[in-house]
Structures are given as structure tokens and as C-alpha cells.
Length: 448
Image (cartoon, rainbow, N blue to C red):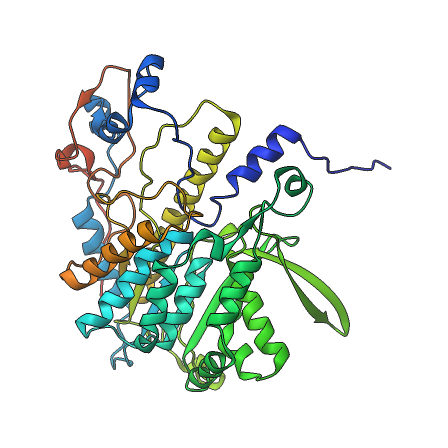
């Protein structure tokens, strides 16, 4: 019999632990400090300005050969015709579903979007709200409505890192479950998720509205979706405590915060699960509006046709280019951050496909490319968060249209193809070069 043991590998383990600071937060790590332009230039590396410009450094001939196979306008036309194929003869009531991603302090941007949206007088009452990580807390405010905007703004413009976590001493931290203590965040959650507010969730749940929060079962390595209204509706001290624990668990960045222990009972046997940031398994998730069980079988395929899905991304579509120090931990952290961004884009692709197949409308808001992101999404700096909040509020009030394309279908978002190292600096203005193709493979459009 062969026995296997899991042993920590010090260098790799610490690198991944440091990288975990960004896991679930979709924000760049602070890997660029102290790398001055002079030091970068002496090594032959790119300065921050050159990194930003490097998006337009292309091998024009290779880029032409490697263009995407579908033009943006063709994709949107195809999606519109696909939606039309599931349109029911008699339309169902239009639904509004809000999906909010994780992103730590970057959550200040979607918070601003929500408050600015209220100011326009067009913000709907959401039938379903789903949230991951910081999106869970944002989702709680969004679900309860515009009456909570003042508290939402306070949380995302005044709280500091010390209000969210307390860093542990390094050596003990490496031998324990986390680099930081999440007790401060737990106190904030108790202040926000009061008994009175939890009772409001229960009342809205009874009306048929739904609020879902995603966590990750650490040991099972599976996503778990919690029906928060159903939990609130039980109206017991235990259910209220579970409500708060789920909010804390969803934001418990693995390695940075300790897992949250949640007791469960299975066929009479009691177990304890450890739950961490929902962003570990998914950056976002969709859940359909509630329908009585007896009516499920009667619903046609297109019963959600014409409904609106709004996605608030607490981050950018693509991270800001950042000089990375030539150190193991910095490289590992940067790589994990890159993976998280890619996961978010992948999840947005899945959601675009889902909305197309069901006839729903796909709407996305992300931090604009021109906005400089803070170095770390675990740094809760009121000044920086107020800046992001104001950007979100301005975006919502400006009348700018929601993004309706999946990642990769706007100028500058395609992969860079190369046949060598002699490049041309085209700049982002060359949309024909950087964007999707002009000579696509024809698409078969579904008949109505």
C-alpha cells in the first residue's frame, strides 16, 4: 500500500499564498513598486508608459493572418436573430437580473454605478441579484433598493483597510490559515446585515424576488450558491448568523483571509464545511427568476425573452500593464492575477451565450480603460475608492450605453500574432488593425 502525503513546498507555497491576495478580487497586485523608469531602462525593460503603449506594438502581417473569425457586427446580428428564434407568441413579463462580480476595493466602481443609476430615475427593481465576494455585499444593498444608497456609498468611500482586516505577523501567518484576520470585516458585516435588514430580505423573498450569494467549499472544491432570502425567511438567531457567515465567506480571499466554518447536517450527521471566496470557482453567476414549482413544466423555452441581464464588473476587462519585479513572489502573484482576469472574461463569454440562447439582453459595465486602477484590490484607500465611486456614478449618469459585446470584440482586445520581433507601433487608434476581423468566416444564421 502506498501512502501519500501533502507537504508544503516553501517557495512555491509562499508564492501562491502571496498570489492569493488577488484571487477572487480581479485586481492587479502591487508588483510594480520601486521599479522606477530609470531602473527599468537600465535593465532594458519597458517603462509604465511604454507598457501601456505596447498594446499597439504589432507585427502587421502576422496580425492580419491571425484575425478573429467573426466580425463584431456579424456577431451581434447573429445574436439578435438567435434571440428572435425563442421569442414566445405571447410575451412574458420582463425581468431584471443583476449580476455583480468580485473585486475587493474595486467594488467602489459598481457602487457608484448603482447610486448614479438611481439618480437617473431609470434603475429598476431587480427580480434577481447574484453576488460574489465584494459583489455579495454590493448585491445586498442593490437588492434592498435605492433606500440603501447612502449606506452603500459610505461603505465604499470611507472604509479603510484597517476596517476590513488586520495583518498577522508573517511567520505565524505562514503556519496558520491566513495572512490576515477578517474580524474587522465580520464586524462591518454585522453592522450592515442587521436583524431589521435581514427581515427585509425575508419580506422580499416572500414576494418572489431572489438574492443569491456564491461561496466555494474549500475541501470539496465546488461552488455553492446560497439562497439568502430563504435563509432570512427562517427568522431564527441561527439563520441570521448563517446569513452573515455566508457574506463573510464569499469575501474570504483564500490565503489572505481564513476560511469560514459553517456547520451542516447531512442525514442526521453533523459536519463542518470550510467556505472561502466564491471567486475561487467563478467570478460571477446567473440565476433565473423564481417561478412556482408547479409552473416549471409549462414554461416555453423563451419565457425570459426580452428580459435584461445587467453585469457590474468590479474591475477592468483587461488589467493595466504593470512592471513586475524579477522576484518569485511578484511573478507568481502577477500570473495568478492574470488568470483571474481571464476567468472573468471567460465567465462573461458564457453569460453572453446564455443570454443569446434564452433571448435575454446582455448589458455589461466595467471600469473604463482610461481610468487608472489602484495597485491592489485589497488596499482600501478612501481617496482611491472615492475616485472609482465617482467614475461609476458619472458613467451611469452620462447616458453611455452598456457594453453589449463579449470580451475580445472591441478594438484592442484581440490576441497579438507575431512572426518575429520587428514590430510597428500602431497605437490604439488603429481600430482596423487591433479590433476583430474584416474578412470573417461566414456564419450560419438561424431561421426564425
